[in-house]
Image 1 (cartoon, rainbow, N blue to C red):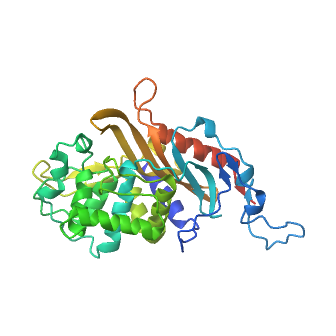
Image 2 (cartoon, rainbow, N blue to C red):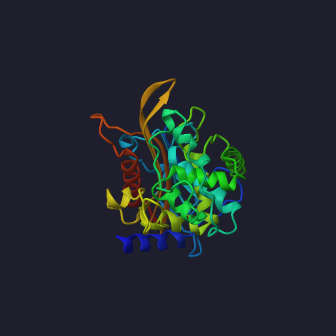
Length: 349
């Protein structure tokens, strides 16, 4: 499996990409309920008298392809192809949903843009753990990277792996406290400023971890912009996201150190798509609004690369439970369905 993940990472990192120069939204060629016109295709030139120098074309035109929309579960979806700077599928891409832990991608981005030495040691203080003991049920049972208060051997890099692989919420808060000038609130302000700079204008981030709060929201399109920006500017992002594990430094509970595992690998492990990787999952099994318990939801950002085509997909608001009140896995299922459809549908001519 490690060889497959390593090979996939090489494919992803060497795929041709179009750098974001502005937050302008690329042309949507297929949107649920609004099929695009052939004339908007970036390569839809008059083919009469075409020569060997004609640019490559994605076949068929995504405006003419029929996606498996009726089998998808997520409320908001955005699927993009890099080689043609083209949106392949979009559903409610500007509708606001809680992002859960895929918000940690923005947390990682802010750290990379503000920390010059990732091997420097962070301060691990009580402040980073205080939200979990605040009495707010939405802050309880958070995923952790098993970092302990008072550790003096944890680096920014350790926290970034702890943030992304096991989705450690204490790792997110530790990073926020240190980068925010001993203020997690300052860090959240930087997050929102960065999101707006990128063009993610329909989002509001209220903590570094993605734990549910009533006014915490984003969209599939905004999270796509944030992820694509991070992916294209910082190769370390995918190096971390594709890592199967990371060795953390010792602490009181683990005097010999311990390994943290990647919890975003469902596309590879569950659906056996060796060409796809789950960059980051977000899962909240329950949340509370006005004291009322509600069933949770799942989010996912992933990429896939084969046959000369590289896709990125973002999904929000898949039900955490199925009809039998069991873990649904529908976020993984949606991405697997879209990738299998796309690679069975599209070729480069």
